[in-house]
Image 1 (cartoon, rainbow, N blue to C red):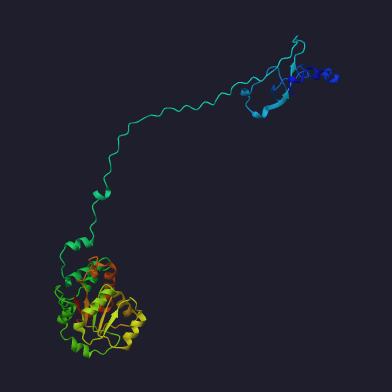
Image 2 (cartoon, rainbow, N blue to C red):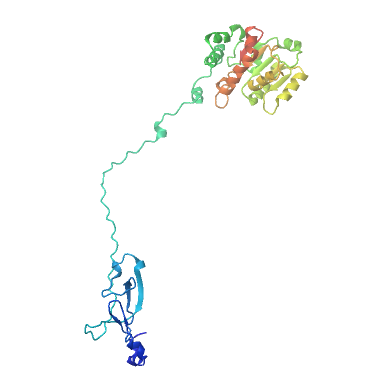
Length: 328
């Protein structure tokens, strides 16, 4: 509704509407003679007052109510004309941002570039590096004696270490790196044909050749063709062959030569499939090196198994001089 309704519309209104004005709490008269267009005001607590509070002074939006559109006439002050009361709007001050306190500034010196650790750090020498530069030396009985002493020194007394010393008479001539396996075996055992014919015990061998792996055992078997002749050779390693099968083979037939690893030979002795008493020669594949230039006794696992095998009757046979040791 607006002023464009005209005075005629107001004159045609019922008489009771103009004769019964409503009073407010402060004596003001609500006069419905003229409606002020779009004059919306806000009261605090729902009661209008003389002076209107602006929204900028309000702290809670819940106290604000909208009373509508009206025209207010004063009573007894001689104001003839109605005044249009509009809301005093004051711009809400923007929240001031907290001023950041200036921080202290320090001059930071540029860090020196760290040198590459891989370049400055000394490279740890490996056994392959040392052995690649050194000339190969043939093994000697003193090397075996020293290894035994170092191995047992941590858990044996001085008296027990002396008992482990082997007499020099139990050692055969060591390989000087000029022999093949066949030529070396012929040199240390010139009467092999006679020994082979006289051997008829099962579950035993006359000669054991100990090496580091199954592949090396196969190489040794192929390289001893000139020496073995008609001798029966048996593979004594764990690759693709079960212990029970090897025990059955040793029980069925006479075997003259055994080539294998110390771990499987030790297991056969434990299960009673191999008897060491008829053994006459025990040869270590001492000087051969693998791709990493390691000898058999350079590998900790093999070295441990070799010394455990020596304690299973080999040392006692060597001291009785019925068994000879050779380093190929």
